[in-house]
Length: 36
Image (cartoon, rainbow, N blue to C red; front, top):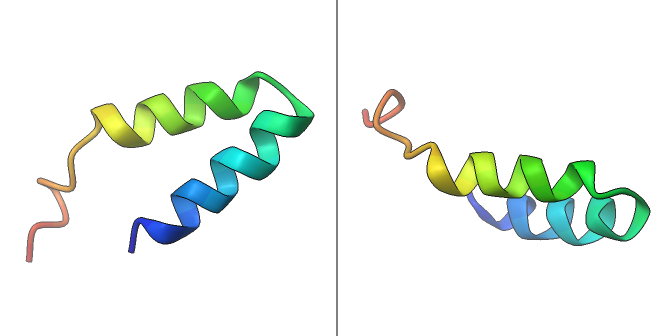
């Protein structure tokens, strides 16, 4: 479920630097909360 992150980052990163933040946040924030 991390494939969309790559595409999301790549697409947004091309449009704005804000995407980089989203990518970093997604990378820094582990899926511990959703560790079912």
